[in-house]
Length: 433
Image 1 (tube, helix red, strand yellow):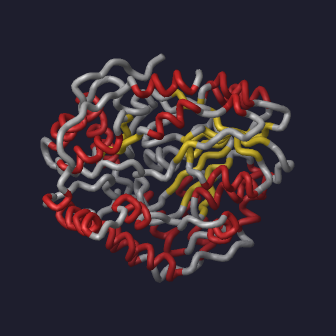
Image 2: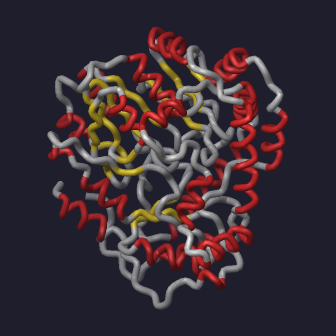
Image 3: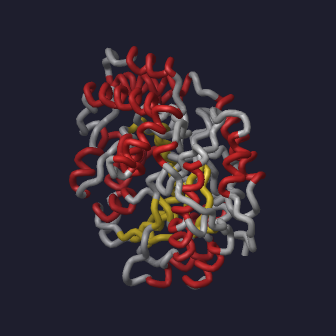
């Protein structure tokens, strides 16, 4: 697929017709946040109650037993990935294949270990890496494929798992955006499965991650490396609790609208303000990132994570999935990105708009905080020596992506209002090739 073909395919997927007049930020009285934290006030109380906990290794063992026989508790998914790369000690210059849309720190970490990140372009309807491109990307230097499950949907790993088995490639799945409850610790086709419990994630524990490492020898090596790392400071977890409490309070519709009006009046980038308030690791140099990642989760964090696993809210997960399906059904075919992914729980609801800024403006005028960057994932570029693998479809998709709020706490009729606000008068095509 050429860049022009991918660009045309996505442009025709969804067209938002022009509507007169910019949104008047000063007139907003209520604004529904782009993302509702999967957290109740009682959970914050539980986080505070866990603060006195001691015995990090014992707490880690408890949560790992809750998870699976091959589980490992980590400070974050990126910490876990860094551990994995340390344990594998792949030859310098080895290729690591990535889903073309992923958290940018993941390829940065691969480069930190002397490896070469290589993107695999996606199928927009499922957000799965395209198997024929995996075949094309493989060389005698290829050692790993990292597949990211995006926005609450799951990728069918079957086709790429077979390719990996046939070529001796380690298959890693990044499930940070696709947790569906403690009964599922990942796809058995993957060698390693990684789950995040950061602030914005499903069943958030305000941090932490669980890895499922299905090779016992590799699990021992990863665990032994992590034991040499310092434990997260208790004060850092307390700061995260306070940060989250403020975030929850400020993202209620009335104060959130006030925050948006203040940002507009003071000429502050509202998106940057919101996204930075929920970011676990500030942007910075790779060496600084690695220094921050090399920690073990504290006992209070592990105790709280165990509580979240034991009290997982299946009802809210189902309600969120239903809300996403209802909104998707109201929109013309092709608007919703990744709508054909497996077992979709709609952690986020992305659409592709021909004019993203106008779509956001229209949604905010109607009281809904649509955004270009409700998730940290980005498209990554091909290395200079592999221009044939430039992920033109993923790049075109991400350049037009808009996230809409679609969670069960929206008031009755909100999804209908949102759909009618962003739906264009003409839709000429859809993603399917």
